[in-house]
Image 1 (cartoon, rainbow, N blue to C red):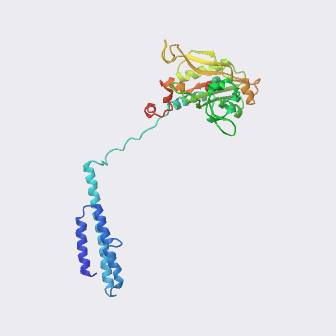
Image 2 (image 1 turned 30 degrees about the horizontal axis):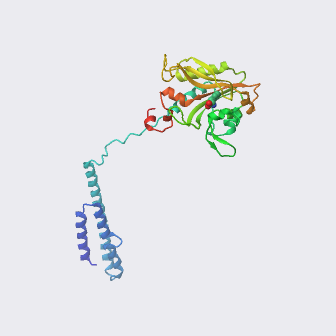
Image 3 (image 1 turned 30 degrees about the vertical axis):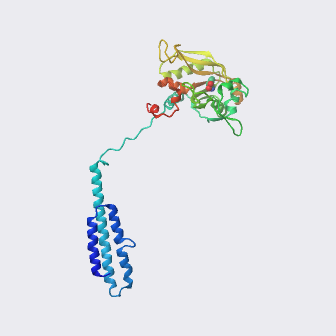
Length: 341
Ligand code: PHE
Protein backbone atom coordinates (compact mmCIF):
# COMPACT_ATOMS: atom_id res chain seq x y z
CA UNK A 1 0.00 0.00 0.00
CA UNK A 2 1.29 3.46 -0.93
CA UNK A 3 -0.19 6.87 -1.81
CA UNK A 4 -0.30 6.07 -5.52
CA UNK A 5 -2.20 2.84 -4.90
CA UNK A 6 -4.67 4.69 -2.71
CA UNK A 7 -5.22 7.28 -5.43
CA UNK A 8 -5.82 4.71 -8.16
CA UNK A 9 -8.20 2.70 -5.98
CA UNK A 10 -10.08 5.90 -5.27
CA UNK A 11 -10.62 6.74 -8.92
CA UNK A 12 -11.61 3.14 -9.68
CA UNK A 13 -14.20 3.13 -6.88
CA UNK A 14 -15.58 6.47 -8.05
CA UNK A 15 -16.03 5.10 -11.54
CA UNK A 16 -17.72 1.89 -10.37
CA UNK A 17 -20.13 3.70 -8.07
CA UNK A 18 -20.99 6.30 -10.68
CA UNK A 19 -21.75 3.62 -13.26
CA UNK A 20 -23.81 1.42 -10.97
CA UNK A 21 -27.57 1.29 -11.74
CA UNK A 22 -28.70 -1.52 -9.47
CA UNK A 23 -29.15 -1.48 -5.68
CA UNK A 24 -27.89 -5.06 -5.29
CA UNK A 25 -24.74 -4.37 -7.32
CA UNK A 26 -24.15 -1.24 -5.23
CA UNK A 27 -24.14 -3.42 -2.08
CA UNK A 28 -21.48 -5.60 -3.74
CA UNK A 29 -19.29 -2.57 -4.43
CA UNK A 30 -19.69 -1.45 -0.83
CA UNK A 31 -18.63 -4.88 0.43
CA UNK A 32 -15.63 -4.95 -1.93
CA UNK A 33 -14.15 -1.68 -0.63
CA UNK A 34 -15.60 -1.10 2.81
CA UNK A 35 -16.58 -4.60 3.98
CA UNK A 36 -14.88 -6.40 6.91
CA UNK A 37 -12.55 -8.20 4.51
CA UNK A 38 -12.57 -5.42 1.90
CA UNK A 39 -9.69 -3.48 0.36
CA UNK A 40 -9.61 -0.70 2.93
CA UNK A 41 -9.81 -3.06 5.91
CA UNK A 42 -6.81 -4.95 4.51
CA UNK A 43 -4.82 -1.71 4.29
CA UNK A 44 -5.69 -0.65 7.82
CA UNK A 45 -4.50 -4.04 9.06
CA UNK A 46 -1.11 -3.37 7.45
CA UNK A 47 -0.56 -0.02 9.19
CA UNK A 48 1.05 -1.39 12.39
CA UNK A 49 3.72 -3.12 10.32
CA UNK A 50 4.74 0.09 8.48
CA UNK A 51 7.65 2.28 9.42
CA UNK A 52 6.53 4.56 12.28
CA UNK A 53 7.09 7.68 10.17
CA UNK A 54 4.72 6.54 7.43
CA UNK A 55 1.89 5.40 9.68
CA UNK A 56 0.07 8.69 10.39
CA UNK A 57 0.02 9.89 6.79
CA UNK A 58 -1.16 6.62 5.25
CA UNK A 59 -3.59 5.91 8.10
CA UNK A 60 -5.25 9.28 7.60
CA UNK A 61 -5.39 8.84 3.83
CA UNK A 62 -7.16 5.47 4.15
CA UNK A 63 -9.66 6.83 6.67
CA UNK A 64 -10.43 9.86 4.47
CA UNK A 65 -11.07 7.55 1.55
CA UNK A 66 -13.31 5.37 3.73
CA UNK A 67 -15.47 8.36 4.66
CA UNK A 68 -15.58 9.65 1.10
CA UNK A 69 -16.63 6.30 -0.36
CA UNK A 70 -19.36 5.70 2.21
CA UNK A 71 -20.84 9.14 1.46
CA UNK A 72 -20.67 8.47 -2.22
CA UNK A 73 -22.36 5.07 -1.79
CA UNK A 74 -25.28 6.39 0.23
CA UNK A 75 -25.83 9.27 -2.20
CA UNK A 76 -25.91 6.77 -5.07
CA UNK A 77 -28.30 4.50 -3.14
CA UNK A 78 -30.66 7.47 -2.70
CA UNK A 79 -30.58 8.22 -6.43
CA UNK A 80 -31.32 4.58 -7.32
CA UNK A 81 -34.21 4.36 -4.81
CA UNK A 82 -35.85 7.47 -6.18
CA UNK A 83 -35.51 6.23 -9.73
CA UNK A 84 -37.13 2.91 -8.76
CA UNK A 85 -40.08 4.69 -7.13
CA UNK A 86 -40.60 6.78 -10.25
CA UNK A 87 -40.47 3.69 -12.43
CA UNK A 88 -43.13 2.00 -10.24
CA UNK A 89 -45.34 5.06 -10.42
CA UNK A 90 -45.09 5.21 -14.19
CA UNK A 91 -45.74 1.48 -14.64
CA UNK A 92 -48.88 1.85 -12.48
CA UNK A 93 -48.07 -0.85 -9.93
CA UNK A 94 -48.41 1.61 -7.05
CA UNK A 95 -50.42 4.81 -6.98
CA UNK A 96 -49.81 6.73 -3.74
CA UNK A 97 -52.66 9.13 -4.58
CA UNK A 98 -55.39 6.45 -4.38
CA UNK A 99 -57.74 6.65 -1.36
CA UNK A 100 -57.45 3.69 1.08
CA UNK A 101 -59.95 0.82 0.74
CA UNK A 102 -63.16 1.48 2.70
CA UNK A 103 -63.37 0.16 6.26
CA UNK A 104 -65.99 -2.61 6.44
CA UNK A 105 -68.69 -1.96 9.02
CA UNK A 106 -70.34 -4.76 10.94
CA UNK A 107 -74.01 -4.70 11.88
CA UNK A 108 -76.21 -6.16 14.58
CA UNK A 109 -77.62 -9.64 14.12
CA UNK A 110 -81.42 -9.55 13.65
CA UNK A 111 -81.87 -11.59 16.85
CA UNK A 112 -79.84 -8.96 18.73
CA UNK A 113 -81.92 -6.16 17.21
CA UNK A 114 -85.16 -7.75 18.34
CA UNK A 115 -83.79 -8.78 21.75
CA UNK A 116 -82.76 -5.19 22.47
CA UNK A 117 -86.14 -3.85 21.43
CA UNK A 118 -87.97 -6.32 23.66
CA UNK A 119 -85.60 -5.67 26.55
CA UNK A 120 -86.26 -1.93 26.30
CA UNK A 121 -89.99 -2.58 26.29
CA UNK A 122 -89.90 -4.76 29.42
CA UNK A 123 -87.42 -2.58 31.27
CA UNK A 124 -89.88 0.28 30.75
CA UNK A 125 -92.49 -1.88 32.52
CA UNK A 126 -90.22 -2.48 35.52
CA UNK A 127 -88.74 -5.85 34.56
CA UNK A 128 -85.11 -6.84 35.16
CA UNK A 129 -83.08 -8.57 32.45
CA UNK A 130 -81.59 -11.81 33.81
CA UNK A 131 -79.07 -14.21 32.40
CA UNK A 132 -78.34 -17.89 32.97
CA UNK A 133 -75.75 -20.41 31.80
CA UNK A 134 -76.21 -22.49 28.67
CA UNK A 135 -74.93 -25.55 30.54
CA UNK A 136 -77.55 -26.16 33.24
CA UNK A 137 -78.09 -28.62 36.01
CA UNK A 138 -80.73 -31.27 35.39
CA UNK A 139 -82.47 -29.93 38.48
CA UNK A 140 -82.81 -26.35 37.17
CA UNK A 141 -83.72 -27.42 33.64
CA UNK A 142 -86.21 -30.15 34.58
CA UNK A 143 -86.84 -31.19 38.17
CA UNK A 144 -87.45 -27.80 39.76
CA UNK A 145 -89.78 -27.09 36.83
CA UNK A 146 -91.97 -29.99 37.89
CA UNK A 147 -90.48 -32.39 35.30
CA UNK A 148 -89.21 -35.43 37.24
CA UNK A 149 -86.75 -37.89 35.60
CA UNK A 150 -89.37 -40.26 34.18
CA UNK A 151 -91.82 -37.57 33.05
CA UNK A 152 -92.86 -37.88 29.38
CA UNK A 153 -92.31 -34.13 28.89
CA UNK A 154 -88.57 -34.92 28.89
CA UNK A 155 -89.06 -36.79 25.64
CA UNK A 156 -90.01 -33.71 23.66
CA UNK A 157 -87.05 -31.82 25.09
CA UNK A 158 -84.31 -34.34 24.50
CA UNK A 159 -80.95 -32.60 24.54
CA UNK A 160 -77.18 -33.00 24.92
CA UNK A 161 -76.03 -34.44 28.25
CA UNK A 162 -72.75 -33.70 29.97
CA UNK A 163 -70.79 -35.35 32.73
CA UNK A 164 -70.29 -33.00 35.63
CA UNK A 165 -70.36 -32.94 39.38
CA UNK A 166 -74.03 -33.93 38.95
CA UNK A 167 -76.16 -34.48 35.85
CA UNK A 168 -75.73 -31.52 33.46
CA UNK A 169 -77.52 -30.67 30.21
CA UNK A 170 -77.36 -28.05 27.50
CA UNK A 171 -80.50 -26.17 28.60
CA UNK A 172 -83.54 -27.01 26.49
CA UNK A 173 -85.36 -23.75 27.29
CA UNK A 174 -84.80 -20.48 29.13
CA UNK A 175 -87.20 -21.62 31.90
CA UNK A 176 -84.34 -22.62 34.27
CA UNK A 177 -83.72 -18.86 34.61
CA UNK A 178 -87.13 -18.79 36.35
CA UNK A 179 -85.65 -21.07 39.00
CA UNK A 180 -82.43 -19.06 39.29
CA UNK A 181 -84.39 -15.81 39.57
CA UNK A 182 -86.76 -17.16 42.20
CA UNK A 183 -83.78 -18.33 44.25
CA UNK A 184 -81.77 -15.14 43.83
CA UNK A 185 -84.49 -12.51 44.17
CA UNK A 186 -87.32 -12.50 46.63
CA UNK A 187 -90.81 -11.78 45.34
CA UNK A 188 -92.33 -9.53 44.15
CA UNK A 189 -90.23 -9.87 41.00
CA UNK A 190 -90.46 -9.25 37.26
CA UNK A 191 -87.77 -10.77 35.10
CA UNK A 192 -87.09 -11.49 31.45
CA UNK A 193 -84.27 -13.73 30.26
CA UNK A 194 -83.28 -13.95 26.60
CA UNK A 195 -80.85 -16.65 25.56
CA UNK A 196 -79.72 -19.60 23.53
CA UNK A 197 -81.25 -23.03 24.02
CA UNK A 198 -80.50 -26.49 22.60
CA UNK A 199 -82.43 -29.59 21.57
CA UNK A 200 -81.77 -32.93 19.94
CA UNK A 201 -83.45 -32.04 16.69
CA UNK A 202 -83.42 -33.21 13.09
CA UNK A 203 -82.91 -29.85 11.40
CA UNK A 204 -85.02 -28.41 8.59
CA UNK A 205 -86.33 -24.98 7.62
CA UNK A 206 -88.29 -24.67 10.85
CA UNK A 207 -86.22 -26.79 13.28
CA UNK A 208 -82.75 -26.06 14.57
CA UNK A 209 -80.72 -27.73 17.34
CA UNK A 210 -79.70 -24.31 18.66
CA UNK A 211 -82.15 -21.41 18.84
CA UNK A 212 -83.22 -18.45 20.96
CA UNK A 213 -85.99 -17.95 23.46
CA UNK A 214 -87.01 -15.16 25.79
CA UNK A 215 -88.42 -16.16 29.14
CA UNK A 216 -90.66 -13.95 31.25
CA UNK A 217 -91.57 -14.37 34.92
CA UNK A 218 -93.70 -12.25 37.20
CA UNK A 219 -94.32 -13.23 40.81
CA UNK A 220 -96.44 -11.05 43.05
CA UNK A 221 -99.59 -11.17 45.19
CA UNK A 222 -102.85 -12.14 43.46
CA UNK A 223 -101.44 -12.46 39.94
CA UNK A 224 -104.16 -13.62 37.53
CA UNK A 225 -104.67 -14.71 33.95
CA UNK A 226 -106.02 -11.20 33.30
CA UNK A 227 -102.58 -9.77 34.25
CA UNK A 228 -100.95 -12.27 31.93
CA UNK A 229 -103.18 -11.34 29.00
CA UNK A 230 -102.68 -7.61 29.60
CA UNK A 231 -98.90 -7.96 29.63
CA UNK A 232 -98.86 -10.12 26.50
CA UNK A 233 -100.98 -7.56 24.64
CA UNK A 234 -98.50 -4.83 25.59
CA UNK A 235 -95.67 -7.05 24.38
CA UNK A 236 -97.33 -7.66 21.00
CA UNK A 237 -98.12 -3.97 20.58
CA UNK A 238 -94.43 -3.22 21.19
CA UNK A 239 -93.23 -5.77 18.65
CA UNK A 240 -95.79 -5.30 15.87
CA UNK A 241 -96.53 -1.63 16.61
CA UNK A 242 -100.31 -2.10 16.64
CA UNK A 243 -103.01 -3.95 18.55
CA UNK A 244 -103.46 -7.53 17.48
CA UNK A 245 -106.40 -9.65 18.51
CA UNK A 246 -105.27 -12.65 20.58
CA UNK A 247 -106.71 -15.96 21.68
CA UNK A 248 -105.71 -18.52 24.30
CA UNK A 249 -105.82 -22.26 23.78
CA UNK A 250 -105.06 -24.78 26.51
CA UNK A 251 -101.44 -25.90 26.44
CA UNK A 252 -99.60 -28.35 28.66
CA UNK A 253 -96.32 -27.44 30.33
CA UNK A 254 -95.61 -29.08 33.70
CA UNK A 255 -94.40 -25.81 35.25
CA UNK A 256 -97.58 -23.79 34.63
CA UNK A 257 -101.18 -24.35 35.65
CA UNK A 258 -103.31 -23.40 33.84
CA UNK A 259 -101.10 -23.41 30.75
CA UNK A 260 -101.88 -21.78 27.41
CA UNK A 261 -100.77 -21.37 23.85
CA UNK A 262 -101.27 -17.77 22.89
CA UNK A 263 -102.10 -17.05 19.25
CA UNK A 264 -102.29 -13.64 17.62
CA UNK A 265 -104.07 -12.47 14.49
CA UNK A 266 -101.69 -12.90 11.60
CA UNK A 267 -99.82 -9.58 11.32
CA UNK A 268 -99.22 -10.13 7.62
CA UNK A 269 -102.61 -10.68 6.04
CA UNK A 270 -106.33 -10.07 6.12
CA UNK A 271 -107.50 -13.21 4.43
CA UNK A 272 -104.90 -15.89 5.06
CA UNK A 273 -101.33 -16.28 3.81
CA UNK A 274 -98.47 -18.75 3.88
CA UNK A 275 -97.17 -17.44 7.24
CA UNK A 276 -100.45 -18.25 9.03
CA UNK A 277 -101.03 -21.26 6.78
CA UNK A 278 -104.34 -19.65 5.80
CA UNK A 279 -105.73 -19.88 9.36
CA UNK A 280 -105.34 -16.11 10.04
CA UNK A 281 -103.80 -17.01 13.43
CA UNK A 282 -100.13 -17.37 14.25
CA UNK A 283 -98.97 -19.34 17.26
CA UNK A 284 -96.85 -16.91 19.24
CA UNK A 285 -96.03 -17.98 22.75
CA UNK A 286 -96.70 -20.57 25.40
CA UNK A 287 -97.53 -19.16 28.81
CA UNK A 288 -99.46 -19.77 32.01
CA UNK A 289 -99.66 -19.25 35.75
CA UNK A 290 -96.63 -20.50 37.66
CA UNK A 291 -97.27 -23.99 39.08
CA UNK A 292 -97.24 -24.09 42.92
CA UNK A 293 -94.65 -26.90 42.80
CA UNK A 294 -92.19 -24.56 41.06
CA UNK A 295 -92.65 -21.92 43.77
CA UNK A 296 -92.28 -24.59 46.45
CA UNK A 297 -89.09 -25.96 44.85
CA UNK A 298 -87.61 -22.48 45.21
CA UNK A 299 -88.74 -21.92 48.79
CA UNK A 300 -91.55 -19.51 47.87
CA UNK A 301 -94.91 -20.02 49.60
CA UNK A 302 -97.61 -20.60 46.93
CA UNK A 303 -100.36 -19.60 49.37
CA UNK A 304 -98.85 -16.15 49.61
CA UNK A 305 -97.43 -15.63 46.11
CA UNK A 306 -98.55 -16.37 42.58
CA UNK A 307 -97.25 -15.50 39.14
CA UNK A 308 -97.23 -15.95 35.41
CA UNK A 309 -94.55 -17.08 33.00
CA UNK A 310 -94.17 -17.04 29.25
CA UNK A 311 -91.67 -18.40 26.76
CA UNK A 312 -91.29 -16.32 23.65
CA UNK A 313 -89.70 -18.05 20.67
CA UNK A 314 -87.17 -15.34 19.80
CA UNK A 315 -85.87 -17.14 16.73
CA UNK A 316 -89.37 -17.59 15.38
CA UNK A 317 -90.36 -14.03 16.15
CA UNK A 318 -87.21 -12.75 14.43
CA UNK A 319 -88.20 -14.75 11.37
CA UNK A 320 -91.72 -13.30 11.42
CA UNK A 321 -90.48 -9.78 11.94
CA UNK A 322 -87.81 -9.79 9.21
CA UNK A 323 -89.50 -12.18 6.77
CA UNK A 324 -86.85 -14.93 7.09
CA UNK A 325 -88.03 -18.28 5.77
CA UNK A 326 -85.40 -20.69 7.08
CA UNK A 327 -84.38 -20.84 10.75
CA UNK A 328 -81.00 -22.29 9.79
CA UNK A 329 -80.01 -18.95 8.27
CA UNK A 330 -80.00 -17.33 11.71
CA UNK A 331 -76.96 -19.13 13.07
CA UNK A 332 -75.50 -20.31 9.77
CA UNK A 333 -72.89 -17.54 9.69
CA UNK A 334 -73.39 -16.84 5.99
CA UNK A 335 -72.24 -13.26 5.35
CA UNK A 336 -74.53 -12.91 2.35
CA UNK A 337 -77.43 -13.30 4.80
CA UNK A 338 -75.98 -11.25 7.66
CA UNK A 339 -74.99 -8.30 5.49
CA UNK A 340 -78.66 -7.64 4.78
CA UNK A 341 -79.23 -6.30 8.30
N1 PHE B 1 -90.16 -23.44 28.32
C1 PHE B 1 -91.23 -23.81 27.44
C2 PHE B 1 -90.67 -24.42 26.17
O1 PHE B 1 -89.59 -24.13 25.78
C3 PHE B 1 -92.12 -22.64 27.10
C4 PHE B 1 -92.85 -22.03 28.23
C5 PHE B 1 -92.27 -21.04 29.01
C6 PHE B 1 -94.15 -22.42 28.52
C7 PHE B 1 -92.97 -20.44 30.04
C8 PHE B 1 -94.85 -21.83 29.55
C9 PHE B 1 -94.25 -20.86 30.30
O2 PHE B 1 -91.34 -25.17 25.51
